[in-house]
Length: 257
Image (cartoon, rainbow, N blue to C red; front, side):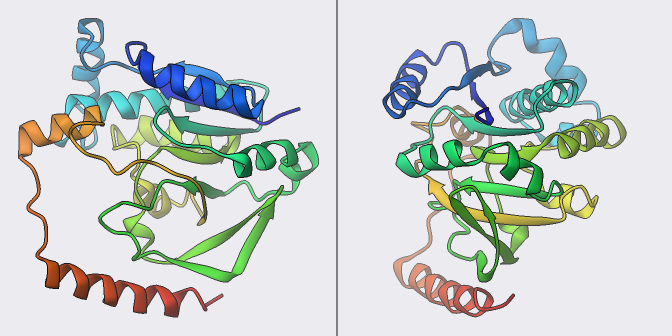
């Protein structure tokens, strides 16, 4: 039985849905759309307002809260369903044959053997402001199906995005409980989940690409730019020096177990 795959997508994003459907059809992979909570839909106004009252909801935009709620609803569904593992994707990712090979090879035996208390990131970190600051081990790896995931040894607090990850039912239940006890938090607050000992380790394999986020291709980024303004880019020299320092750190921590 193929691992369960949910694609989080707004109902109104027809172009994205058509593209991702075409990509999955071309590769012969089964998936399901999960209708995301739409912050622009008036019927969700009260839902978002309630979520804003707890946790760090007061510091979040409507879109961020809607994103969090979307992933929380998936966790609730996984917790009460028959599947032990789920791959959660967002509708603007790019997949290829590597993803197909993983889905076909991640069978029931592989699923039973994979540690449940880790979060397995399938990509999405490239193009972030913090990349390549992540130190991913070349030696501390976990094999799952056709893929080898390296443990994030350095700067795990820099991990971002919820665009492509593999999660176990046990972790999903714990995240539902976290929301009940802690309140609202951003969907990609991975460091918080680590601090709460829900996630033991982060493992990464960059097989899925997520486009560089701009106000023109991201609902969340557009909302943030309208509220907070756009970030001022670094100068060329400053940017190159940061990149050099990042690569030196990454090279060191990638050699650690």
